[in-house]
Figure 1 (cartoon, helix red, strand yellow):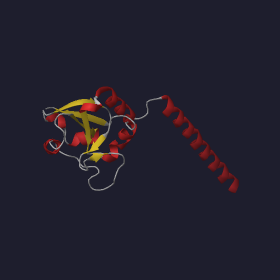
Figure 2 (cartoon, rainbow, N blue to C red):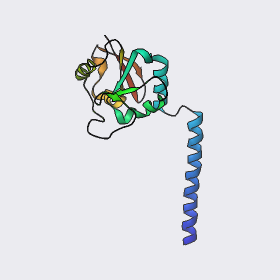
Figure 3 (tube, rainbow, N blue to C red):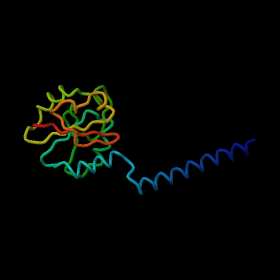
Figure 4 (cartoon, rainbow, N blue to C red):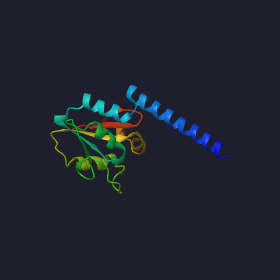
Length: 151
């Protein structure tokens, strides 16, 4: 009985090792995250010196901030009014801000700079900023949406 259990456990662990190595190889070989693709889009399309990128979705956008680390880009947490480096899990870490309220918050920021709002696609389904003509959708992927506030 014990020998059969050991054999079953050995087979299960063998599959885990095989899958782990397989995922690791695919991570290196292929574009494996929406976060990395979104960060790359930001680097290629947003002027870091003349722009501010804002989010209200800290838990779901922090990975993008990590991909932008050691670059002139940063993501600002709107409700904390600070550069996002990590997530504080509390009641304001993931609030869906309606477009009208977002415009009011954004008046606090430098009006000389372009303002971009980084959102998750899931939150965008709850309150679609593209219905408000002040926001132009400039990036749309499976997981993320970026809007530009028109001046």
